[in-house]
Every structure is written in structure tokens, then in C-alpha cells.
Image (cartoon, rainbow, N blue to C red; front, side, top):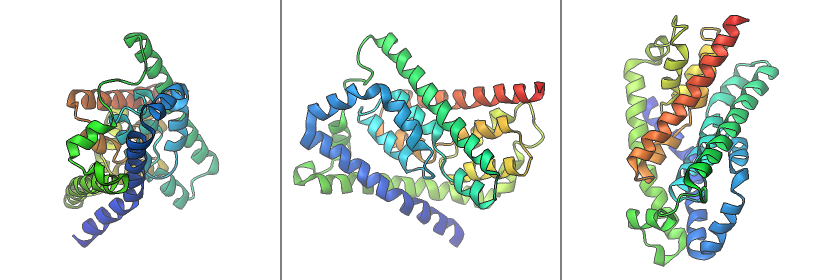
Length: 286
């Protein structure tokens, strides 16, 4: 039980700086820069998925949490959000390095995740532009709406407001992460790993579900199974693409359109398993 508690607190401590800095930036945009800053970000929008895909490969899930908050405030586009989610490496990179994986393998996986994230994000933004016929940033929901919903004290300064946001989200993440870690402790990670063993056809489908677990367990299990040769590269990539750390968890907390949240989850899962299945078929044909 102590291991469950310590793992939960460790995950949260690593995330707190990202949460606070993100909310601080959002408060600055809302209360200092205002519409001019948002307009500037919209103009830089086409490069959003490229930047998001690049930042996502940094071995922390903090960027996915930050992206969720920025999307809920309609500062970044849906394509940028998905680019971050798909490229997020979470605990994958530390595991690869600690297990002395070949340098070429590490680079290939990182480039594949970043490239797929960028491509998917750019395509999504392009389709959204054609569908809506206007700005890629969805109007009608802005940063201040998050502030109003969380009942923060914005008039007392952006630092206090950002701290209020951070505490609210941190407590929510703490509870959910503890419950997930407790479940994994009671059921055993081996039981979760066995779900995707000896199932070559359904491998990407099942690995994609494991990747959706909103903490580091999913990425660790998928990476270990791949390094041990138990699952193929297609299944591994499917699980690693859908693994966005606590990004989805934060999204469901701060973005109050639950139907939209579910569509984003479905889109993330669909992209991950589609890529995984294609790679599995190509590998089998070779």
C-alpha cells in the first residue's frame, strides 16, 4: 500500500510545475494580454501541431496536461491537442534508456510518434477549417469560462488564481491516480500484460486500450512487452500512441463538453489502432 501511495504522490509532484505554469500563462493571456494575445496565437495556429508534436516527445506527461488546459481555454486547436497526445512519450523514453534499447530503436519510435502526431494534427486542423469555414479555434468557450466554473479569485491576482486552478486539478488527479494505482496493485500488472499476449490480430486493439490508462503504467507495460519481444511493433506503437499520460484525465476535468471529450478520446484511440494495424499487416507481409 505504501508503494501505491508513494507512486501516486510521485506522479503528482512531477506534474504540479506544468499545471501551475500552464494556468499562470492562461491567466496572463486572459487578464494581461487579452484578445491581442489570443489573436496572435490563432495566426500562428498552422504550426501548432508541429510544435505540439515536438514538445510531446519530452519524457513527461506534463505537456499533455498543459495541452488539455489550453484546449479547454480554446488557445490551441484540436489538431494541436491530438498532436501532443499522440507524441507524448510519458515513461516510455526512460524505460527504453534504462533497458539499454538500441539507439536506432529509440530514435525510430520517437520520430514515428512525433511524425504521426504532427501529420494527424495538421490533417485534423485542415478538415476542421473546411468543415467550419472559419477560424480553427472554436469560439464561444474561452479561458475566463474555466475561471468562472472553478470559482477562482481572479481579481486578487493571476498567481493566486493560477494556484487555485492548480490545487483543484491536483486534488482531482490525486484521487483518480490513487484509485488506478490501487487497482493495478490489487490485480497485478502481469494480469494487465496478459490481456494482450498471444492475440496477434487483436493486439493493436487491446494495446490501444492499455495505452489509454491515464498514468504511467500503460506506457511502461507496453514498452517492456515490446522490448521483451512479446508484442510486435504495431501493437507497441498502437499502445504508445494512445498513451497520453494524464492528458485525457485533465481534459475530462476542465473541458465541460463531455460529448466532445468522448469524441476526442475516440479519435485518439482510432488513430492509434489504425496505425498499429497497418504496421502489423506490413510486418506480417514482409
